[in-house]
Length: 637
Image 1 (tube, rainbow, N blue to C red):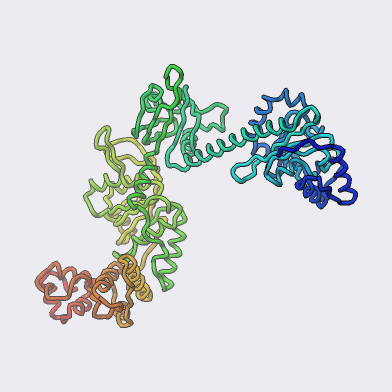
Image 2 (tube, helix red, strand yellow; image 1 turned 90 degrees about the vertical axis):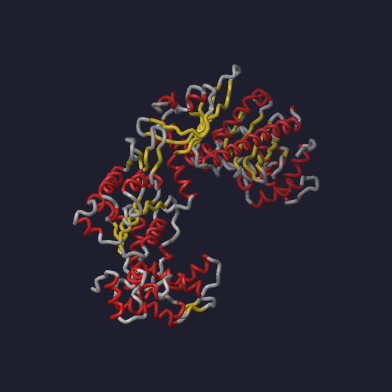
């Protein structure tokens, strides 16, 4: 705020009158009048500037470190006008948003040395009315004549201060104090202060934009590098620095910047080196060989800066580790847990205790073996353990050990090299950072099991047809319908692999041992079906629940799911009655079983090989059923 010159004698009289009888003259600026009243309320010293509110050395050192870029920037600005400041005995102060003096430039502030005033808080509560307090209070530049200041020692000096704003937020205060007041127009000082403030605000805005850009780059799943002429890394984002530290090239541990030619053994064969020869590369698969590790990634390199002779002087390189790319693809393909442990319904204490154990197992780092009859919920348990684990954010990859030939299974698990230039990862690599769920682990061939045990032990794996060892970081959850310990004791399963995967074992009981859970399980399945197909939920009649609870469910939860699905879509109303339940699932109890062995075998499996149960299902006598058992070659026992 530009103010016309005032009579210092009159201003002095206004100040004295206020101190003596509390009267404010009508000629006192309203902002100054209000500030005097507040200064009096704070009991600020009127004789000299108080340095009582000073930060201790350690605290002030941390504060200066925090604001060091701005302090250094203002040093450069004031250095350019140092002769002018010295000629007119002008002090320049930089204060933070709490009115703490960060730095005193040029001449001493109110004849104090920088060491006396730096680190001192000089708000209105501390030293009363000043141009600093006016700029702080009103968020506007303000010229204050000496006699308007609260401290009498300052009455021979004039001062002007301005807030440094970013948007609506106050970040700093700049202040100029002049002693030779009659030799310099206030307009000149205000104009100079405004220019410095504008310069500083532009600097802060650019710094904020740079931080935003860095935050964006740090959030990307790519490593970004700005490489300068001479192969020095001028900039690396967060992932880029992690990669550099991974090969021992941490700039913070050395005064020398990272030089790629020093840490990458095959640097001259990489796209970055070619970039300085004006050769751009896009999405190129690259192998980086270092003393500690070999990396593979997809890299793009673009020449960035050139000199007057059009020679490339810097390049930008963007790369994504192939293992990270696989994780992204795994997520995009839906390789995530579909079920949580909470989705596994349990009313009885037996299964509830198993869920508690599963939560505990999920948090440790052991591989896991889940045992239980077919259809008992091993897959859902595996999903729940993965989701509750520290690897829950990583991929969940599934492999079925009994679905294919040993040769294809080995390639599916470990990957395969088709040629010298074409190589595909296996599910063991794709699950890196997450979990590999191996269903029917008992069907894994011995030689593949031994290779898997070695890979899990060393943390390295090689694809079929090549000798390159690649790091893996995976947790294996295995599911088995049989007693895997007994199979191992009979040398039907590799001992080494069993020892690795059996450190945490979870045994899921068959549904026939969980009759108290059947009602809740059934209702949960019905509600899931309704939500999945966007239909209204249906109720189970009490007599229907009684049928479900008395059946032994040889196919376990999977069979219960099939029976309820058929009933859910078969019944048009909102109540499922006993007549809507077919314990044979999709197979109707008609006479096809009498002539069709496949239908008969399905019914036999559904009944769990129990003659009485199958006779009830097919509505025939046991004698009749024995005749058909003999017809189709079944032992009645």
